[in-house]
Image (cartoon, rainbow, N blue to C red):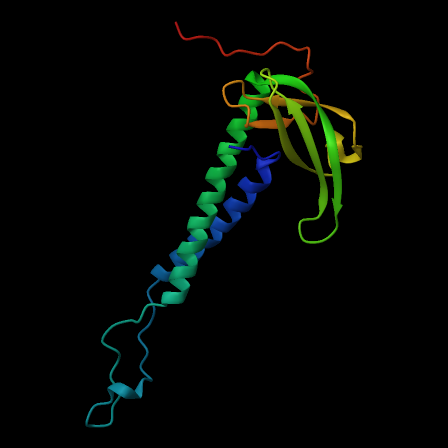
Length: 181
């Protein structure tokens, strides 16, 4: 799994979408007054009778449950990305990588996209893309050919990320979790 560089945005957006879904779903549970103006159920005396059952608002229910599902999925994915990022920061192998491409996008997914590559301990070259932000990200002013620190999982080198805030310099030892005794 490729970790997201900032899972916090995914967690916040997921929580908001889930809250909208919960609000819409709970709104469906409120009792509604029976409609008495329906003339399709008129009696012989000309009086209008109420509908025998309340018709649910199917589109609203589908939308509410869909928002709830999408929001929970976004939050789950954000938590997984957060766990992966923390694992890489504490136990990942730090190596020197190189920026090979910098793209400035001003349209749909605006921002700065930095493509980097690095070689793992077996010499296999891997590539990755990091979306940079202007707030607290040292790669915002990145240039092609610049050296960067890349953290990767020794068991699965396809899981990697840039160490954008220089938390783990290349010469720093790994921080191992204490073994259970």
